[in-house]
Figure 1 (cartoon, rainbow, N blue to C red):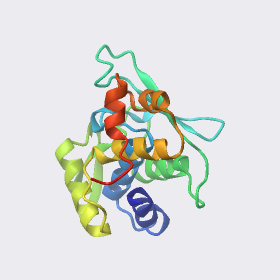
Figure 2 (figure 1 turned 120 degrees about the horizontal axis):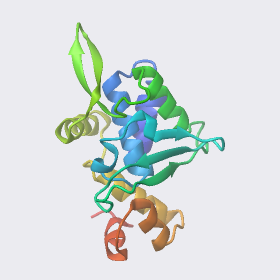
Figure 3 (figure 1 turned 180 degrees about the horizontal axis):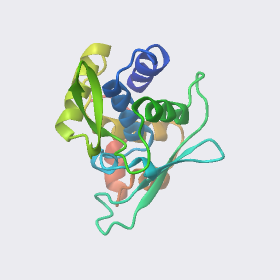
Figure 4 (figure 1 turned 120 degrees about the vertical axis):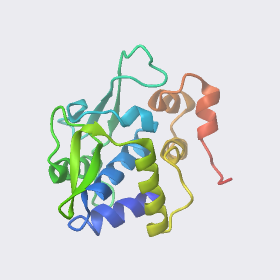
Length: 191
């Protein structure tokens, strides 16, 4: 429900008014939720790590993660399926065009204000504290549940379980090294 509110408010209803920070916020939340990823998995992504496939989906290469310390890399995919007239690849393309990001640019760059507008510092990635602060502001603005940057991972795992994904598939998508870890993220009831 919270993810739907974010998409509706920033992309569906506010696509023309959304500033660069809101666009970055939304796409990061999409990656965290639908990819079941940690902030550290997506924070250092570059635009060249994101590919739009012929089948309409998005392929994302995570070069190094908490469970891949050797940096062998792993890919995750975001569906191109339209739900309610919206699909993830369209949101990602809208974001990249809006910020003028390409190639070696950080997928989630730092922002600064310059002459009354928000400008991306394309070679520096957003900090955890900045992303968390923006999430807190959006939680208040949209009246969302009290969520953190890790909530997307929990929500994605739970939504996957509700949709019928088995434990092994959830473990693989989320990059968990044990079944017990994956089980902790599936929350069929709110605490």
